[in-house]
Amino acid sequence: MIQQRFTTGIFALAAASIVCSHSLSTAAELKILSTNAMRPVVQELSERFERSSSHRVVASFGDSPMSISNRIANGEQFDIAISTPDVISNMQKRGLISAASREKLARSGIGVAVRRGAPRSEVDTAEKLKTALLNSSSIAYATEGRSGDHFLGLLQKYKIAEEVKSKLRPLTTPTSIAAISKGEVELGVLPIPGILAASDVELAGPLPEEMQLHLDFEGAVVAETKHQSEAIHLLKFFASRDADSVVKSKGMGRIP
Image (cartoon, rainbow, N blue to C red; front, side):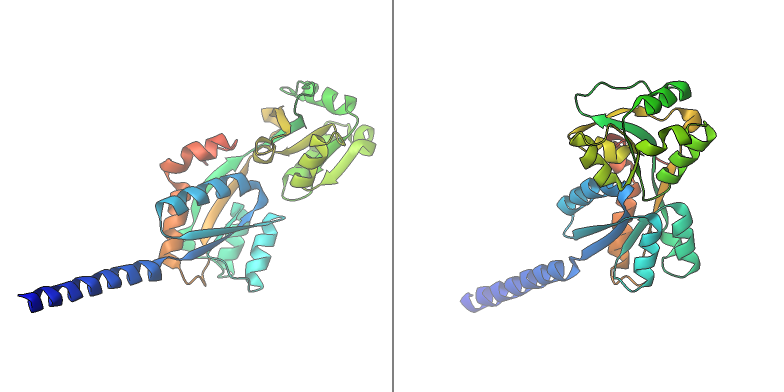
């Protein structure tokens, strides 16, 4: 009887060791390379995924959508790429991502940022925004992504480019936010998620709809990943209804 109990105990201990070993061996470190505009969403959703799984998520961010493609093409190792649909499509053509894994993640807009506590300019119509820009002492805009080029195009379209030329400060979104929070720049025309993520900056309002640029973002699993199933699981979580509240809280919406 003692021998039987001893043998049973040994088998139970061995089984527990196998389960523990399997759990450790299946835990993966999943690496995301994302465009900077998705930073607030990616960071919070990654933390939530880690709490509900055995996996660790490491997120890196590129200065522009195209930099995502270039870094992966140059051999940097990542499991998931997040960028604009045109860049993801380009990566698909080059065989850098799995076409079947593509997921629509979020849609963002552009807004006007001011220092927290500073008077807010009215920007809800094209005329009011023009007035705010003309009356401002300085205007930062994002050099990465498409929002900066779109803003410069608006200045041309509404015929105020020359009048505000000396006020323009072309900076990255994080540098723009820092400059506004320190009072070095009065206004910023920037992606809304970057504005909402900052503690010392406020959103005066989104660009009027007729001036707005909607920026869509997609994710895909990198073709050379060693953690395909885990990466698919993470990406589907990002696209799921469970993540909707986080996407909304960061000033973004889902792509129709």
